[in-house]
Image (cartoon, rainbow, N blue to C red; front, side, top):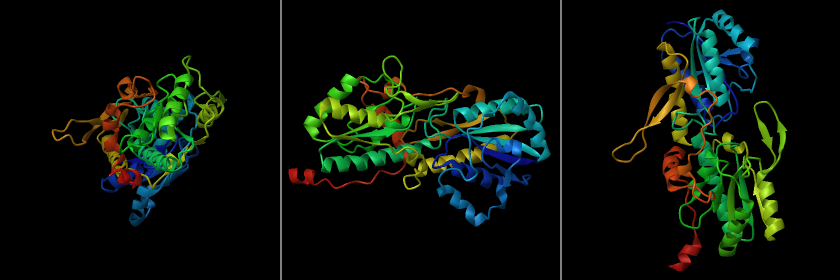
Length: 392
């Protein structure tokens, strides 16, 4: 069916969101019947201002730059849509002969995707979701594009910090990772380890209540044994009552902005243990880094972009493209693409399962490491350790 395409980005960018955009554009260029692939310039609000740019105008030789461009080339937003907004969309889409609407984003965007589908399903407009989030908290799909690169970044950063702390073992370093309610990024720091004793030495995720006394006891014991300790903690740590360990500094209807958990934990170590401590907060560096972009993540992001447009042109609507991991006889990593009803993922937050967290709640299990390892791509660089050579 002939018609034009509209791509909308929602929420926080990732290191591979533009790779999905590349996938859509390349699929469109190879598919007869598509005259325009519009980008909503600045997110969903651009639908109402009709601020569209035809992405097919980008020179073919420049398109590969999307694969290594951080953030989002067409812009994003957290624009709040209301019921009346959805009712207006069909007429706007018809005005531009838009028959295929692709929304690329996380939980909130998939909720929007479902609502646009309901509003436009009688107008012959196909609406498909492209998953995107560093938080990896979208339901059903094995993982989300964006997560593998964020996981690679936090693992590499933790490994580098670990070598620094081992070379000058006089303090405790707290690395605060993004993820308010789901600890997928924090957990991925475990992939920094190559041998026993490597950083991170402690990992704290929001799926388990944070116990201050146990934290201090664990830090003290490790400091006495190692001389320097690296802790990776989620920004969303909560106590046994479910309250953030650092009071929120600002709240909106959709989001809570916490204070610095890393600074809080470092101050606890200084005040209560008398040990030097400092905190590091990579923040959005971890979602913008192309230097640590996972090639597996990038390729899969292209794949979901292509598959989303292909599904829409097949007449599918009200779905999200996802991944199902399959068992391979040789143990290799393998996924297949699935078309998932968007109603099954709308605003459902997937957190770390108990099997991925150790009993004390201060580390992850081997099951998590084996699950996560293929997503970050090639092995991280190895570092020389002269201490090991001296033992030989």
